[in-house]
Length: 455
Image (cartoon, rainbow, N blue to C red; front, side):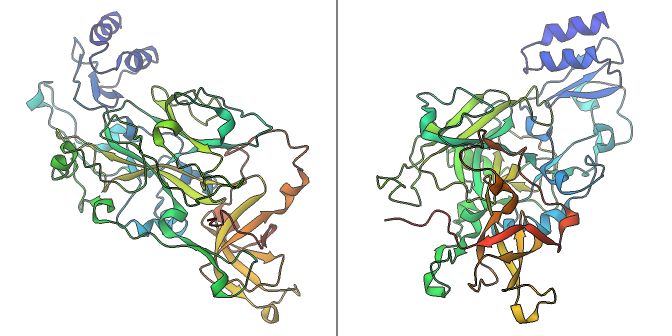
């Protein structure tokens, strides 16, 4: 063990692996082959041990807290097949044709076919690998707060940060820069659009709408079928030219650069009647944010990136899915372990407020057809992608395909005056597979519209 420790100390800094390797040794990992950190393979036999650093740190393949796992009850979350969740709850992703979540490596031994050979030289390290990674979406942490209430998980913010101008943040674990050509933010409503009747008129002409996005060719994901060990090398030239092809609101480009170009706002005016703030990633992205101590897992050696939500922002629409897309570099050849799309969906979560969420109507039961004696029409609504049955507070006739505002009834016991805390992803009620097609008394459709277009 002393010899192993000395060797690890001698390679500290070569690939940024020292701390992780030392922790592995401290825990007494003695298997023949181990991945101590993405990008470093350490063998403890034969002696002396040797590390084989590679050019890229595959931090994104080592994942934390699968967002999809929380939808289910008692499951083996490290090996569960999440395809049904992706098809039913995240169906809007079909608008981004071909995009898939990251496929992570949970047990290295399960990805090797046969035993490794005795030698350790490059040409002797020939293993047969199997493509059996698990679909994974790292849980996106978030926090929303009122001006009068501080946040629970404070951080310094980007340079020049004024916390009074922001109402919350989105946060996700990341590794070193230089690995992802683009990191971008995806909004469900930005991708699929929405129709809100908003109580202003039940007629189609009264809808306050946001159109479905029409993807440019460069925004469409590149897919591999069947998936291979390496990303498409055809992308390498585009990356070297700094083209940064990727859908979404770019938080990082060209592997290292936080863009400083303003992103046009949905509104030209804000709620005070002034000119709405046009988000500028360089002012809103915190690349090395403080840790979030109550995240379900310790993400070390990863760090945290935050996107701060400006008070004039039209993000999020309460109840929508917000995700993080990553487009890894393709050159020099980059082992990405059978990923299926570039970019892939790396992190995400549903984002709501304390009192409000939203969902998309999937079916309407007219009052005359109800068997429960209830008043008014009843609606099947996909909230958090889970189809549930809810009533309405009004007599407007909402239609299939509309996004409707939903009031969380029990939350109204908290008045603005006595709820003195921020609202985080940890307090957010989560619908589960057992809630599917059940009547939810705690949810009710309300005649409201989020982020009405103001001119």
